Length: 204
Image (cartoon, rainbow, N blue to C red; front, side):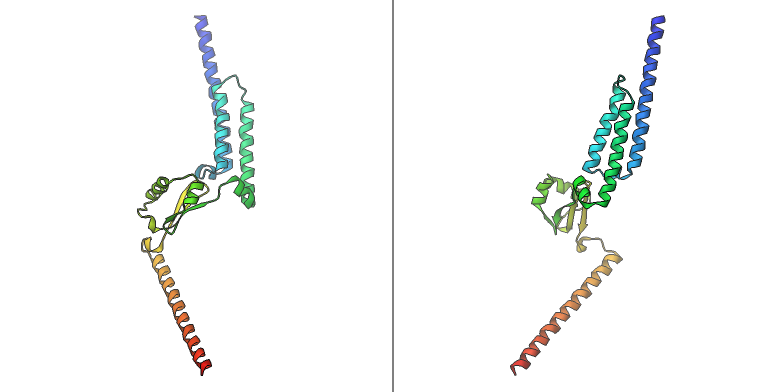
């Protein structure tokens, strides 16, 4: 009876210890994620992915192995979080740092044509592009003016004007474009007529 009680107490103590460790790691990790900002959740860059994987691995260790001390686990999480914050601030101030830490946006579609060289560079295939188009409700690739793989891995699409839904803004833009084209056409015609007039006058 005494041995069972001791064993039960030991198991309870171990469970409490594990629960306390889990709570401590959870709180520290949540605090660091909050300090790093919402960008870490919504936009996963290569830098964010690496930091997230390392923090996850480090945080899991003391919850699995009770022989490990808790403090040496919390220190790397805090250090990684601070490094991420510093790197993000440097990336905001320096284009070179930003290009080193994050991928540049890559144009994959231009005027309805897939840029195969860029597609190979980002290690995507035609099926991947078609899937992205379907996800954004694009049935015909010829409707796409530009399709870009963003630095966070998202896929953005700009449709051609004629493929966009009709709205007051689109109608106004189209009208303005037509007026500009008409003015340019009349200017070109006037220039040609003036040139012919000068040639005739010179010939006479």
